[in-house]
Length: 229
Image (cartoon, rainbow, N blue to C red; front, side, top):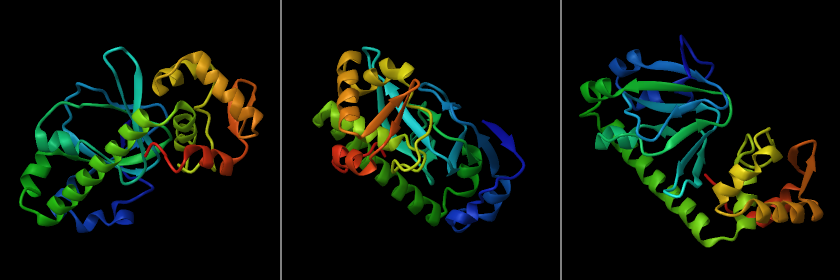
């Protein structure tokens, strides 16, 4: 992630100019992120709150057993650092860019100086955190209650560029199957069996070390309306 002078996507595209005071807007910083950038890691100390203006990010963590667990995928207007700002805590989850995109950052210092009494900002923050609680609860339910084939279908939909499976990018490589097995909480062998089953049903195609979605409707049917977002 690197700071840039201006972004192709503006805060006005999301109405943020109506949320913040002019003093804060003048101090905002724009950033360009690239696919694969690690935006923050568990244990980091954040000094800014970041707003995703374009692109997609993945929020994940690692269990005590070393297993990866995807909590959710987020698209604009995802926010990084809201809980850390309110609670004054370190980063709890790792955040990674799934696609290229743009973000705007506001320092915690500026927020405390100019927005502490701004009811528009406080109401906005309340809505954001309430929605985050709902999505985290949904993701936890998905991981705990649904079988691996449903979770895999949901994951395949989630890592598409538009979040609906209609534009599938390069992340699902067969060389990464062990990582995905860890994320799904299953074995490499079992994940392979499910992928073979998806292939035989015409849902996906495995070719040249990658996996491509062939039938979006069938995949959405397999996901049972779930998605990691």
